[in-house]
Image 1 (cartoon, one colour):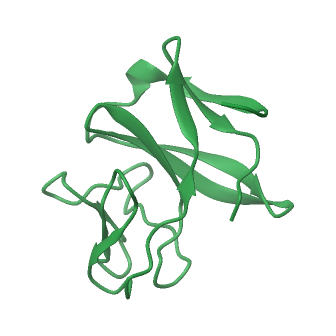
Image 2 (cartoon, helix red, strand yellow; image 1 turned 135 degrees about the horizontal axis):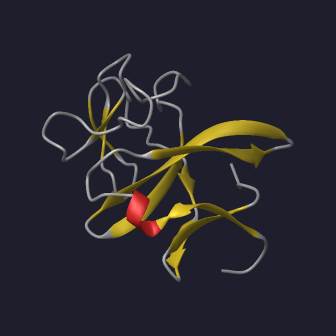
Length: 118
């Protein structure tokens, strides 16, 4: 990846369809909550805000998956998102998906770009 990267966590801290790792990211000059989860063997990062109303998704810190462990769920509205793409797949997201955050796994660690592009 080009640009500046920041270490988020060790790759082993991110279990498949398990608890996500929360972090802050600079977006448009202000800090924004974000998270990374592992799905289908790869890390996927998103801003931590529902596509319906900008509230944080996790129902407990780092808990982003629904009971089936197949989708990310908004704890407030029940909107469902595909964990690889952030695409809205059901509920009150009205077709608006999650905003992706570029993350990469390298040398046993997960890294994120220093700034996002909203």
